[in-house]
Length: 151
Image 1: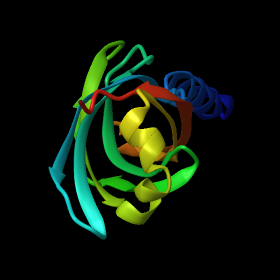
Image 2: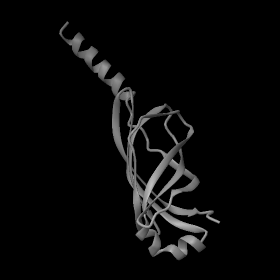
Image 3: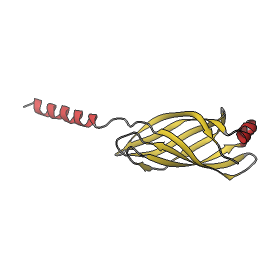
């Protein structure tokens, strides 16, 4: 009789622990709609749409994004998102972003950015994703070339 509560506890623990897998990080797909919102000598504001894929077999909530962005190995700025978005299971989704860009870092490689059609983008940061009120922080890193259509 004393073993019954213990066995029920073990059964419940195994049941809940098997269903609580840590969510996988999002897969970067594309960068769309790159626009210069405001142009300044010290800072400019750029907006863009990041396209990601959710590889999880369940929908998750994206609560926070904290990302440092580098273009051609020069720090450009920080992207922060502090709002909750629901991401559907196994689907692509668009994450709109506005970024304050340090112009001195862009001016260092202005010839490459203006006359080249590709730049090397490096993004590092963390996201907080979860389900049912339980969130985990997942680090991410993306590095690759991106075609720019400025002209």
